[in-house]
Image 1: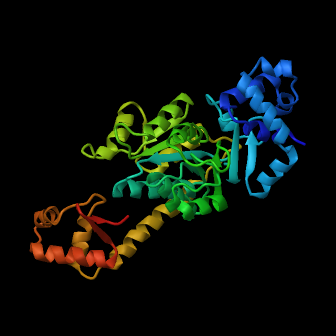
Image 2 (image 1 turned 135 degrees about the horizontal axis):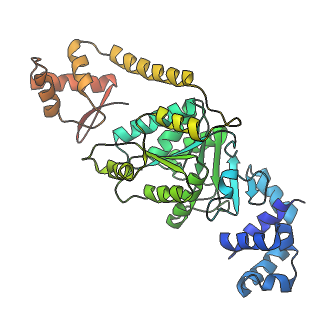
Image 3 (image 1 turned 90 degrees about the vertical axis):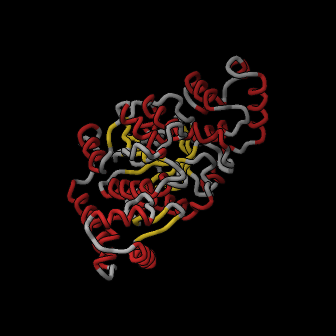
Length: 382
């Protein structure tokens, strides 16, 4: 019988929250000591209701059977008292009493970056999330995020596609995939990293569970990278927690007229690092975080990633059939532009085209899969 068995039982007692459990650990030194405490010893440390809940759980709970059932479901359990509990979380304010994990925990000897941002991200945000997730993973950096739609999920999926490791911290039990649309990402994380939660297995996602889990996202990271955030955004809650934990914050700058970039531009104005490329963060990690026991890959791999992006852009242009298509393609951006705006750019170059010709060429680019259209106009695919 290990202390984990006792910790798992204590963590399942109704009414025994994180603060109560951490306080009792300080008082008694181990979960076994809490379990075996006398009535007089324990009654002075908890409320009457908490003590009654403890007695009720103690009668019904099978220390070996329940823990074995958890393990057989593929769920690992790491209480604060365990040697395998993440060192990065040990010293943060209000550390979780325990973590549940499917897959594995982040490697203590590798740098970690959390990538967070808007759920309803723009094409620019999606492109940046894909780029940073891929490039950082290729440098050997672990990507931490919340598996949410938008920036979180895109960056994590890109890290996995690049052959890296990513870890999702959930606002539910680790056996609950939320949002369901990210099921394939959830499965990939378990295979190529892990999904982590402080909540009991079977816990359904609720709005009040997400802000507390953010302290774990930032706590497991050496750097927090923000990609698109509105001026008042849930993403900024994680930033506040990161600063309280002493983590470095970087932000991707955006256009001053884009509401999704207000939060990032504001963070930069307040002193956050500017993330103009993945190498900005890699260089920070190399100088400030990595030592003899923590390595990141050298720039040769980053150069391969750069070549991969250049080759991808070249292959897209190779699909184009004529100079007109190539000219218009190069004027496209990650922000939607109307036909009129694109036409004006073409005319400004001194090229002779009609609005009809530009419109036809844009439709052809969409059919070729190198451009897309939404209600706001045409844009380049990332």
